[in-house]
Image 1 (cartoon, rainbow, N blue to C red):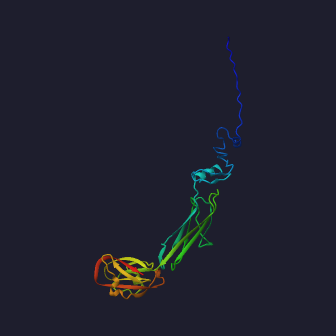
Image 2: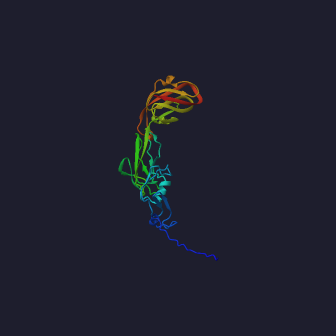
Image 3: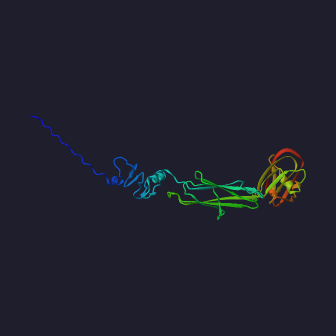
Length: 302
């Protein structure tokens, strides 16, 4: 009996693509719109595609996306990746004084250089000093997000000063960084100096006191140090307070016990640059013989 073979042709019917793929215009592989990221009922794709609904993260912190963070409807693929991998950094403002923050009375004022860095914020919209928008701070053109301004200070220091600067940066274009107001405060403290040194005769003028070998800013009651050598008579001059102890490292002795130190003398001493004088007390210390040692002295005031 001959065997008969029956051939059959099965016609393959095309299945309709899912509604989601039809909406995106995609097929089995990514099309012109780029990659597609799918998660649950939400699809994120490159190009112009965006989140179709709000998504609240319920996973542990992923990149810079914290648990509970809401990714809003309309967020683009670029914005999603940026939120995941990039932590926005706000604008900053730094101020640098050309002089020290503690200066002698009468010292010449210097300048302040401000450096403003935009980082993730929008453009700079305001810049002024001393809490008055009429006092404009003129910043340079932006270079790699950085702008600088110099405030030149005039005159001499005769009292403590505080300098304030304010810079405002706009909200970032993608809304990830809010408007930022930055404040910078610099304080300058003004002091008289103390003076000490070896003398052949007791000083009688401001210039002679200021010419003594050692000096420093006098900050009120405290401890101060100086070094002298080959001395028989030395003096210490302070603008306020009372010297309670004068000692050296080599041995224990309070030079205030010397008869010569018992009656300090008053003398007017000018500030820096010939500025107004202040009344000083000058203590004179005279020993019985010349010391050829180099000694480190400490004096304490109250």
